Structure formats: C-alpha cells, structure tokens
Image 1 (cartoon, rainbow, N blue to C red):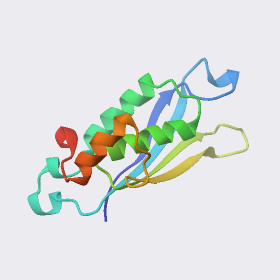
Image 2 (image 1 turned 135 degrees about the horizontal axis):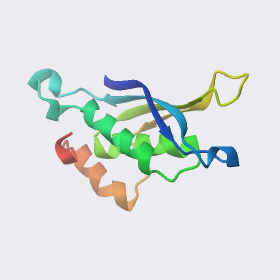
Image 3 (image 1 turned 180 degrees about the vertical axis):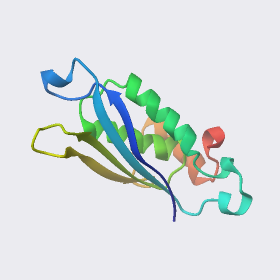
Image 4 (image 1 turned 90 degrees about the vertical axis):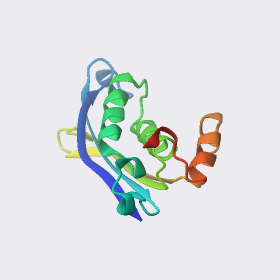
Length: 141
C-alpha cells in the first residue's frame, strides 16, 4: 500500500460543545494518511494518478472555514469520507487534535481509521464508490 500523508496541518476553526469554544476560533491540528493499493503514479509519474496533497490541503482549508460541526469525531469523519470518496483512497487514518485544550494536558483529540469497503453507502457515496471500484476516480485526483 502506498500512503500519501499530511502531518501537522494547523488551522483555526470554531468547534466544540462548551460555550467557551463556540464564539472564537481555536487551533486544530490534523494529521492524515491516505492509502492507495498501489499508486499508478509510480509507473506514470503523473499527479493525476495519485492523491494530490496540494488539493487535499486546499480542501482542508475550506473545511476549517465552512464546517458547522461540534465534535472532533465528526470533523475527522468528514475528512476520512472526503479522502475516500473524492480522492479514491482505499484506507485512511485521520487524527484531529485540540492542542492545549486544558492547562494540564498537551493535547486532546481523536484518531479514526476507515476503509472504502466499510464506508456506508449513501446517496452521496454509492455512485462514486462504484466509479472508484472500477478504477475511475472522479475529478482526476
């Protein structure tokens, strides 16, 4: 398995369940690993045959700005689904961290792992996953 990764992606966003978290942005750090069974790019040397981490970075920036989620788990799940559905990853690991959430703790957060095969079929994912399974990744990512 080939793994494309981004580590230490830092952004400011409003997320949380406590009143103190819902009125101003706070730092959130994301690490993600997206596995491809074997990146075709190893043979072709073409970015269209793998996951373009520059495009993933842009999508993360948009997510930080636009989401309306309250839990880190939901935030991580959104990233995992994006990597599988939109970028054709077969497996993903996503870590989302709130650094210095408490004075006596370095960080709190969540780590999730998902596979394309285990992703529940929804109207959004069903057609896309069939395309991915056929080796045709939408959007040319």
